[in-house]
Every structure is written in structure tokens, then in C-alpha cells.
Length: 414
Image (cartoon, rainbow, N blue to C red; front, side, top):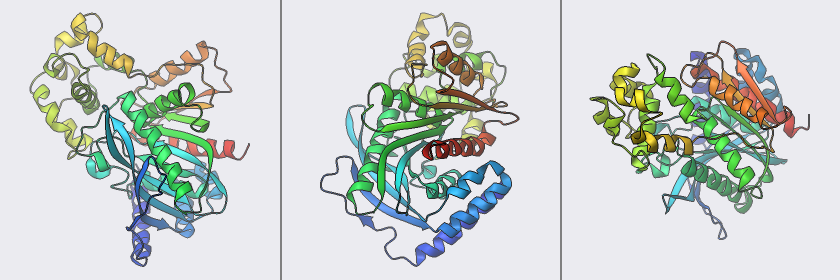
């Protein structure tokens, strides 16, 4: 992400802190409603004035001219809140957390659920670090007329005592849906004067793109009465884990070994790997992996503990026998079960990806798009957007802007 974006959002942090220091009600927990089933607690983190929003978006337009429609639509102050809510994980009732951004206007607003990408740091969960650049971008986007919910995911925020079930479809969808339910209760039961409609928009990037498509499939096939899903924008997601794995096995080097280590560690903890980590990963890396994802190291730090050489990282037996050896059948099943395949969608869907992405190959999005077309999904429902010259880190903001612009068009009936 560009350095001047960091400076811009640092200014937003500073001005927000000045405003917060003048308001004694900030950071005080607010009472929950007696009829709340999902919402457990809520606390105001900050208020972003419309003047601040306008300054941020005006500058953002100089970096990304496509952000113009968002800037034009941003009309209100924004209240940012941390919430905790009831969900389940591995059959256990738990209390998770997330960030909610509320436009302080008089109109009726749809819900916008954003699923963030791969994170390994406890201190960078949305509700823990609402000042991170991406989360602040979403906070100002709320001023354009969306109630925005950003779940922390299991393993972060209120659940940081648990391991993060990375790329586990069931637990991810559950915590996202329950965050949506809790956000609705927050808006309707707490005298916030937020008129939340039943319309829903969903988006996400990287792992969040995968989480968004998984959530969309669940909403369309199992929970169609929960919200009126209007559009889904899925960016740079590893939708087909088998394909991603085979793609990496065909490379000499892979620049993000911690993605693989994170998935292997997650599936080992979920007890669906079927083999010991040492059957997949060479030493000394096999012994290291269970110690690397404790919430204290970022991706770069974890990468330095692994290796970008595929042959050094992964055992020869795994590289040669992943597709055929019966020993690795549970690994194949785990990846297959946690992939998301094409279906006869009923919601306008966009698959967005940077053409130069070497972390998550754009071929996985292109293949999925073709699978939807082959199923007979019309081009009016499914669209594929490739960003020339954009790699994985650089794609976050352009994909986000494209997603929000599209949502605004739909929301405004354009």
C-alpha cells in the first residue's frame, strides 16, 4: 500500500483522537437489548466527522481517480463501534467480536459485510486495530450510505485464546453470518436511530474473497430468508484450494510460504489433515509451523522462519504423490471440502483479481468464472474483472473501490 496512504490515514487517526478526547461517552460499554439473541456487548470506539471523511476521500481521489463516486456519495458522520456476539465453534458456544461502522444520517441503509484477508497478528484484528489503513478506508466508506460490519474471525479479538481456523469454510461462514445478525440487533434494538434495511452487500479480499463467496453460497442455498442479498464482490480469493496447491507444487519458488503453513496448521488443529505435518513439510519447518501462528508474528516474520523453495519446504513424497498417494487422501478431501465451487447463482457476482498476482494466481478466478458460465449462469449475473499490472498487495484498494462503486450503482438503481 502506498506510503502516502499511510500518511493520510495517520492524519485521520490524529484528528479522530482529538475529537474522541472531547467526548466522555467514548469507550463506555452500551447496554444490550433484552431480546438480543446474538449481540452481547457494544462500545463506541470513535466518531469520524463528515469533514474528515471528505478530506480523506478527496485525497484518495488524487491517488485513485475511480474513488470519485464514493467521495460524492459520502454525506454523513460515521460512528465506529466494537461489538461482541454469540456464535459457535466446534460445537461450543463462544463470544466473538468485530467492528461496525454506522453512518449517522436519516436515510435507510443496507448492510455491507466485509471479510478481511489473511491476518496472523492478534493486534491487527479489526476490533483491536480500527486505525489500520484498510479498516479506516471502510470506516469512511460507511459515510456513503452503508452499515459496514467487519468480523474479526475466530482466533482474533474476543476469541484470540483459540487457534484461527484458517480456510475452514464452516466456522468462517458461521462467524460471518452471526456477525451480520448481531449488527442487525445493534441497529434495531439500541436507540441508535439507524434505519437498517434488509438489503445486504458482501465483499472481501484474498482469504476474505474466499470467505465472501463461501458466505454467498450459504446465503443463497441455506439462509435465503436471512437478508436480501443484492451483490457479492469477491477479490483475489483462493476459491479452489486443490488447484492452488497443485499450482504451487509446479513452482520452483513460492513467495508466501506462510499461506501454506497457515492452512496446514489450521487443518492439523481441526483434525482433518489425516497425516502428521512432517509427512507434508520438511524439517526444520515441520516442527516450526505449530509455533508460528500464535498471533505475535506477521506474515513477513513467519516467511523468514520458512523457505520460498518449494522443494525445500515440502517433502518429495508429498510433491510427487499428493494427487495419487492414498496417504494424502484426507489432505485432498480437506482442501476439496473447504473449496467453493460454482453453482447456479441468483445474486449479481463479481470476481476481481490482479493480473500480476503471484500469491494467489488469477487463474483460480478465471477458472471459476468459466465454471459459472459453463453451468449456464448469465453474464448479467457473473462478471470477471482483471486489473492489469496489479499484484496481490497492490490490489486491495483498487478492488475495494471497484466493489464499492458497483454497490453504489446497484443501491442507486443505476
